[in-house]
Length: 330
Image (cartoon, rainbow, N blue to C red; front, side, top):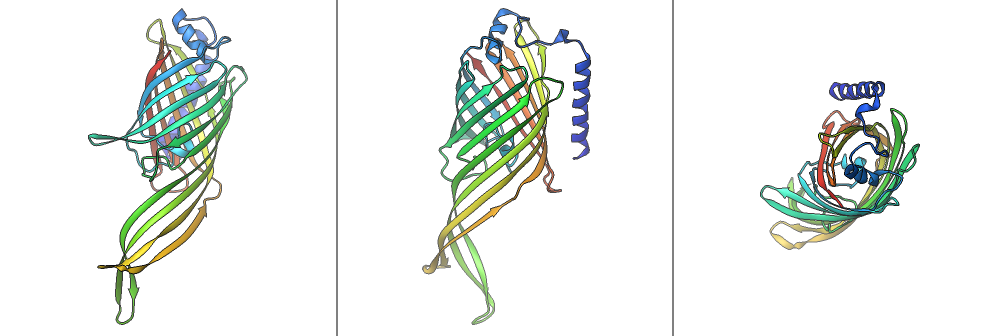
């Protein structure tokens, strides 16, 4: 791991130790009546003895497109285009949740709709010992894959983590699968020796159907800080998480098309071929996730930054993903 990321991780560990030695006077216990009534009623939605159901409406901006919750999938992105993500959801007091996202890509002065996603999930946070949850996301609207859209159609995700202690270990597991189409037309060549040495040029019109499957395993350790905010009706949380990301990827490609002689499109031949590959299981990244939130009444602001260090190559090692979400709960 490069020195800057190591130093940042050490600094976070020192901060956690110093935090543990301080008194709890500057923190807000989320399940106690320690702040104003309006904020306390809001915080009851997040683990109090009497939680409430609520709607959520918000908008986010960032460069994550592959998954709603699975960091292992988002770390695979090769581009950092800006996306705008409107979100609506309903969260039941029993832990069940339903949400819907749009993914809008901003390129220059234009904005285009890439795809949609619908997520159903469940989170159990009432226990003081352990928290767990799972979700299923279905992506819609993608016909041909572009680097700024998710190649996955179905995304299953689950997590479990310890609630008590300075360091709270846990694990995340994900399984994702998808299918998409790619079309291309390009000029290719083949070396020939008869009647004389040279190259034979031809056009290739190709349509490929690509199927992908990914399994991810992410052990992590985290700690959540909670503070009073800047006024009497707000609260701030900050949760750093250190992660080791592993997984296995499988993909297959079915290609069919036609090779046509240059300047003679009627002369040519069709082809149909298949190929597949599996990566094998590897722990391939070390990641640091920084998740902050500011709650003011029913309003929330949630910036999140993920720093990824790819372990299996000396080139293009670093990847930084970010999202900033804001909205209302009512």
